[in-house]
Image (tube, rainbow, N blue to C red; front, top):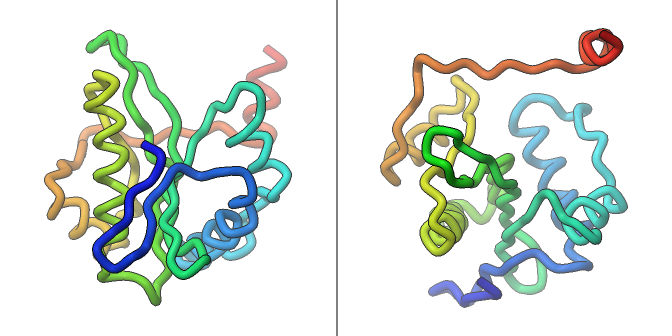
Length: 166
């Protein structure tokens, strides 16, 4: 997917070099929304390396309206040993609060679902905070089902270093 114009004239497209400041601004807005305003360590330079370096490991789709990025979907590939295929893991989906209700979130999700279908991937997955009722409602409305028996696990900081050290 290169780009497509949405009904109101906004453009949904694959992120391109030069989008990093807008993507980072939306990441900061997301962090505020998720009640972790000081958690973002990412930079425009790191986004350049991650999204547009020699071997990108993460990807992004954006919605641009009137020259400003107003929505992002940042994702990467997963792999299922059970299906034998890759899948898409949605790391972040965010639409600027002033732009919600225009269908941008659904358009971004549809674009990633299309990536899965076009490439033969059988899973499109993500997490959502349990208190985020608006997002949970949105995900149910597009047909997503919760995996209640699974919990996310994470190693960071000292625990990560200690395990790596053996």
